[in-house]
Length: 374
Ligand code: GLY
Image (cartoon, rainbow, N blue to C red):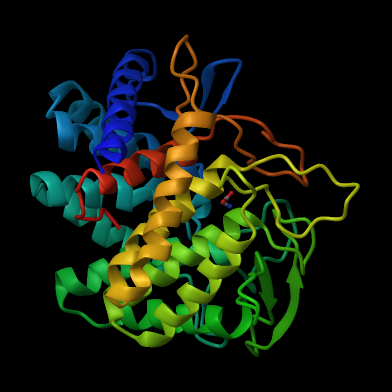
């Protein structure tokens, strides 16, 4: 136990030092992937806009460093122009406003943050397709593209915004939409072996399933590791908010699939089901996300079931710290070797801000910070 606490505290110290140093260059901006040691900054419209402020809030919660708090607040304010840009908003409002406005509301009680998060929840609910019981993922990426029937596994992590909104307002509509989407995921995304599809296309008028698509995974029936991680954490969060056993049981099934496919160092390759001739770089971000999901799952299952999930979550985080961090030198990212989008060749061996965020959240959880922003 003493040995275990030692690496967690050491890792937390490194994170605090790195984030504090990086905050002086990045400020209130929106990093996405780190290349040659420096984070590339994005416009706040991209789905990753919440993760840097999320990192800042996680570290602030422990250190009380007001400079970090102020940057997180400035990031949140910058997202206002996104909330007013209807055409560019997609389902990732959950990621964006949970780690900014809900985080701030939970920490400081700021009423403006609550208003922003409730507005985001309303906008997210507006993407619900009642014919097929799914939340539409994206708008067209190019002129004429028809995305009306597209839903993706990542959206499981957007649902907590809706559950939170129901708890906050007492209005059941948000939760009801979230549960219907989650039930569609159980029916169409999760396979019997615990693997998951990234994308399902439905007929937007009839709600019938049309096809599974490979998306960021290798193929429609492969097993994209980050999608699997989103499912573990998202399903566990759906159980957390609803108490419905079907979400817990499915989270366990997906977790077993994930854990049983981990290589020796506990950090997943980008897709668990690849032909031998396809390259298999790691995706450290999938490891970090899954670790957070596994640690929450360990709290939700029966006591005798808990160690398997707890240990897996800890092992992943320990390996990320010991084998995937570059703690000396000028690298801004916290964990190396993330894969953002292998099929499109985008950032296939880089620190990714969401990998960093979940690494920090996982460490915070091991340090005893159990109140979730989600
Ligand atoms: N589509 C979000 C992700 O890359 O996981």
